[in-house]
Image (cartoon, rainbow over all chains, first blue to last red):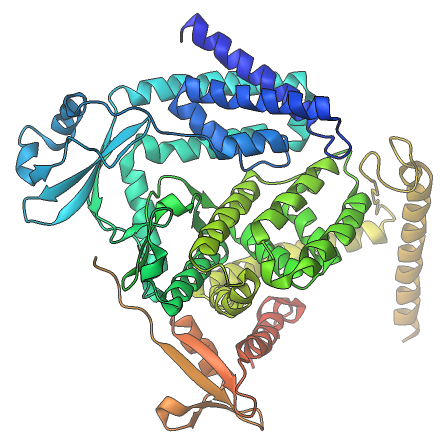
Length: 511
Length: 85
């Protein structure tokens, strides 16, 4: 990597660290400081756009982290553009030859090389007519993309580690390795289009119960070429919605939300960027979701807790939300859990009581995420991505059916989600897992019980009781409980156990 | 675009006396065990209450999960009494 590029990366990291450090204060910030934050945010966006495609992806991930960067940076990164000037088709022809073979032209009757459908920093997209007459979309990766991106990945890893060491608070609240992994996972489908094709196949399986939700068919996928069916209609940000009936608009909006909820909580795989440009709508056909390059994945436990979080929000249950959120994340050594619960007690009624029909889950999650970070609770980077995805889909649905209540749709979808979760719970795989757990427990329980009883009989039973530093009754590092009460408690339990054993023995002898 | 057929939605009726009826199958009684088996095979099921017409699928799920889990995964299961009834 050139020295100039290294300097740009170092400059970007300095700007980001300054932003993270000043973004803690969000209330009562002076006008001059706000203006400074905005100027810095603009410089961050410009540097990212200047650095190229990989850094644009980093920016898009950072735009999901309201717990890390300031509001000014969030706003700037939301408008991050991944569009560059069109390159002539000659640049892409060698890629097509390498990927599809020397007779690649035979696959197409026509390629509109004059006006590409889109031009992003990693690929260019063309409208084509296949040899069999079908109209399709051809996406071709720019030459040399992989080498550039791999060099950038190494550079980011180095820079992030240095930043994490220099500012320990960042490392404590932000799981740097996990966040880097999310970024690299998001880049993978951009480097290998077969990964995007797999996401689309999974998306199609998820959409099978929805008559009005579609995912384009993949006709051909190689690491650098993707050929897919053309989505009917127009992108939601360009469509003329006056040609849709009210019923059609509401049906599309409701289907989109339900489909996404199912992705978040049942399939645990979701389109990470369902903004209006990625949703094509047609009055009869319904909605087609395109661009499956960036998807989010969450595990079973996170998925169930996510439902709990949204249900708690919908039911104005601050304590339930605080508890589910804490379970989803990890408390850092300086976490203030009671403070977080108080924040939720204040925030949740404000969110739900303002206007139930206007409840915006995405923005609500973003606020909770921010409070959690300020109270020292580390949250999985996937939750940030989930919040951003919900914000985007709610924004898209508001565009097509503004009268639709996200809360009502969620309540309808909840039954569907719960049925699928129950099906999962009662599935053969889950039953097999429970059987396995019982077998493992059955194998070890008798041994452990015998060992426990032997130690008790020999007066050798010892118990260790401890607490994490900073917790417990004391305000000092180790806590008073660890130093004074714990030994007394352990001794008491040991005496109680010995007496019980002795009494049991006496009874047995007496009986 | 090719796609798999949507799974049909089957609506069952919860009668006033708590029985579960499949009206599409001549009003036949559906036991909780059968409901569980049909759920496991991937059928899309919903339950409506006979009197109110309201959706009571979640009530039935609660009953189902409460019945199944303690037997299979609880302490009774560990001690050998689980899942036999």
